[in-house]
Image 1 (cartoon, one colour):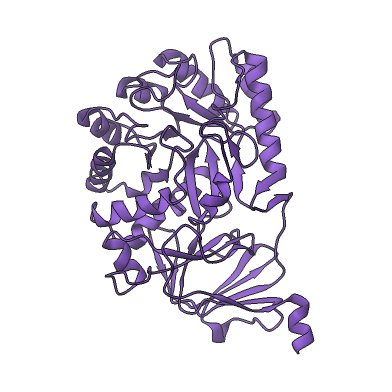
Image 2 (cartoon, helix red, strand yellow):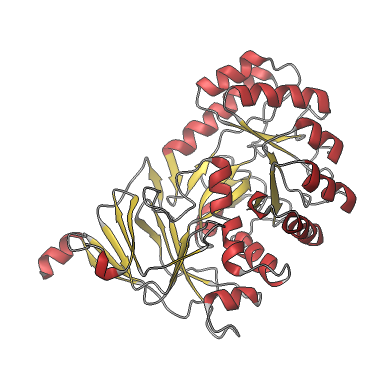
Length: 405
């Protein structure tokens, strides 16, 4: 397991021989091209190899026909410190998720921290520590956006201003702490929004000791930026309340792996009927009582595509571009200027599908062949997914290329 301090980016890298480029953008989920040029950790060009100048590249990756998608974003995790979680006393869970194609994780609160402080001074301090530590130390290179305080009674507007000034820009799940009533939640969400802090609310039945039922009335009144695990984490609201949230709010609808799958499909179907698929984002809600799911995001993509009747290229957008736009991420979309965070995929060996997209639409998980973060290769063939039919190769790397030349 590699634990990296700070930010490392590649020099010039060319990824060629791509069989498919998934953009992450619902408006145009598939891009025409077979080559991407990366320089200093950013996408510099997308198109045909003959039209891209890759002569000065220090690294050349031959995709051998694999598809390239934005690195997957898990919009709902509960980290604590480094690559360890006390929820299941597990080490290396983030590295395992990298092997499931996840390159960015967003904290919904560091609620599993042993002895988590609930006084105002303590909860603010914990948020700043989490924000600072994960900004400085990336487990296996994965970007962890952390420092999400769980709000408590007694907080004032000044506390939110101080948090924002310290670099905290999101709240943990409202409802996991002492604030469970609509009026207090609404007031604090307003303070948070005033200072540029995004918010998420727990939805459904209680998940951990101290949490409570949060129904559609509270969710709508609080008006958070994200309706957290709208399909329950684990216990979902009644159908009529889920439909109400879809119809009466325009906020993000977060579907999680550790939730109710039938409710997930209801949410998807309702959002599609409303022509609002741009609101769907995906998370795992891990670590949780059901453990860590390294392939949780891929499983959600396959399930929503195969059972929900959504084209696979659209389902990939739920776990990439939709979240990137909502969270204002630098990655998550294949666009010039974006962070070069990629996952290279192919159909699993012996899948009934004849292509990556067809295999996913049949419900099979794809094989992760490589992950790249800020233009740097972080993992090659996944130890967790089924083996990909084809694998990329690094054909030239830095000084080795100069020596061969």
